[in-house]
Structure formats: C-alpha cells, structure tokens
Length: 120
Image (cartoon, rainbow, N blue to C red; front, side, top):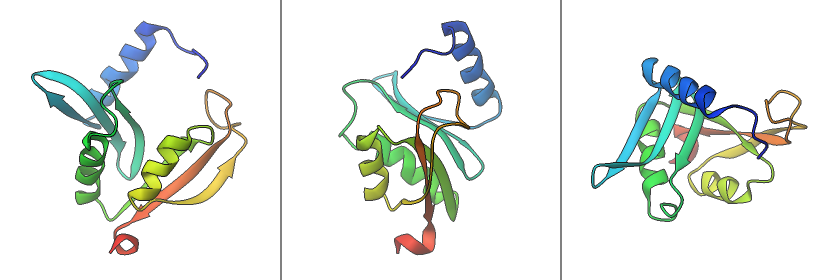
C-alpha cells in the first residue's frame, strides 16, 4: 500500500469517522484489536491488529453490521486476496471491478455486496 497520508491526517480521519458514529470497536483485555467503520450501507474500513486475524474478530464485527442492515457494500483491493476470500465466505459477491482510478491509492479494486436474502 502506498503511504498517502501523514499519521496526523490518518488520526484526523479516524476521529471524523468516530464523531460521525461510523465505528464499531472490538476489544480484548482492554485494548483495541480491530474496528469496522460503516457509513450506512457502505463498509468503509475493516481493520484488525496484526496477529488478530483468523480468530473470528472480523466475522464478529461484520455480523454486527449485517444485523443492522439488509444490504451492505464495500470495495476491496484486487491484490488483497485474503480479504476477498473472507468476504466471499461471509456471503459477499463481486459485482464490479475498477482500475483504481476512483480510489486514493490508484490501485485496482473490486466492489462486493451482501444482501440478507442472499445469505439465507
């Protein structure tokens, strides 16, 4: 991933997401181990601390978002095959690909959606 923003800019953006009520946090032993940021039906971010993947934390965060909506969508980088597999296991399907011209990183990505009726 190219480094496009300073640490201060990243922290500022995270503060904006929190202020807007987009963020659900996962904690273990009093420390943040991951979070999901969602603006309505758009999943903007799903991040886990290194070493926390494969333990159900991401699934738990995603399940909470699913419980609050009948439809969700997200964009994932085409190079992030692990995330693509995770989302596919969780019922998301690919609907579009792009060359990355619309994202800050200019990296090819793909749009995935989840519908409650698709996952039953």
